[in-house]
Length: 290
Length: 290
Image (cartoon, rainbow over the protein chains, first blue to last red):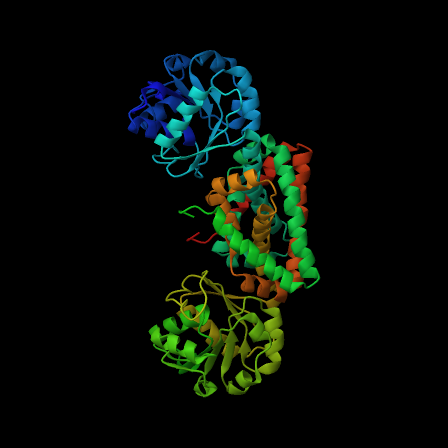
């Protein structure tokens, strides 16, 4: 760690689920002293067994020496943090989060802590809980920080350095721009995909339903993957990014209606041109491992 | 081949693209004499190099000894077969196809040949053309035959036996039921997925567009995979299964509007219940390798 100024001596992680636990494993491997705060003793024991941090406790005192604290909490808890947690955060520490929606989080936390930096590591699996954390989760994944005009620049540098050390691709973005972008590429797909499953669930002819189940191929599996994901996570995203999602949903509806119109009018040349354009567009959104 | 009665001595394949070429490779491995008919000399040469059949030609005479002929042609050619092809099909041979829509194919071919059996092997990759065929493509995949009341039972048995020998899961279905089921699990997903890409393409804010490209993860890649597929194939499916697709599209729109309503009304409990139901529904549509 060549840059002593911005390297924290001790990193606190609040919550040791998928994201928090993965951070704990990688940060220890990078040589950091990691302190993990959890809610329940049973979770603390499991986290200890998995060695997710060097020090794991339900006592907030373990955060007192940490120069950087990562709030790896669900959005709901992040937006309404307990007084118990707030009183445990050292005033001089740098605080960051991992929430998938940024404007409401930044709005709350800019009032709560002088050194808050919003961030969103875009990594995940279908697993959750204290058993889910795994090494290398952030490697080559985007990690967005969302500074505002008043954000402490040293704090921002510390969080950014951390993301880079974890192998992530650091991206800075305005919180509102971030939320509109993720509405399009992350939240809208969940709704689009879930609505496809909902359409199947409403099929009233049992012969068609059975055939549909027998004939569904990997294409159907792919298109419905995110719609069949964690319902609580889906709800939290939609609830906290409502206006961007409703906007995206309306645009989506217009586009689907255009297709329907082309089909009804048998405007096949136009329809094929549309499909050619979407085919050309897709590679621009793919990563190496897609 | 224990059942001499229904095993053809020679199998003809018309078209040696992904499906036809894959059939050629597997059928030869099963010990069959395979004759492949193609359109162009250059294709014949490439097919010969790849050993897609023992006999490959642009001359329809090679079909004259075949007891089973598989029309591995695009839907458009299947629905308007050339007189040249029709005159080359022996009257006593069993004829089947591999088209992804069945009612219009069956409607045309029941008038053209007494021993026609509609079928749809549900296997595919993103590849096409004479270089695309590969071994084992049909293994463990569904293969639908769509007999009607007048279908010759011996012909049906021969096609069914072939599917089973290729390792496919044989399913019999009414042509219309088949088309409605594939509209739901195969064609609707293409539209839903393509409309998602179209929505992104209409984003006017360049900062959001760039962020969306940087932040798109494997979830976006999965949801847009079938929408970014072969435009000609997409068009052929929609064109030939129009009424079932429009019906599916309208049901889909209603379901998406329900989500939008729940979100606007902040009816979160209902919205979460919906997501829980779709999550429970999805495994019923998955295969072992999804």
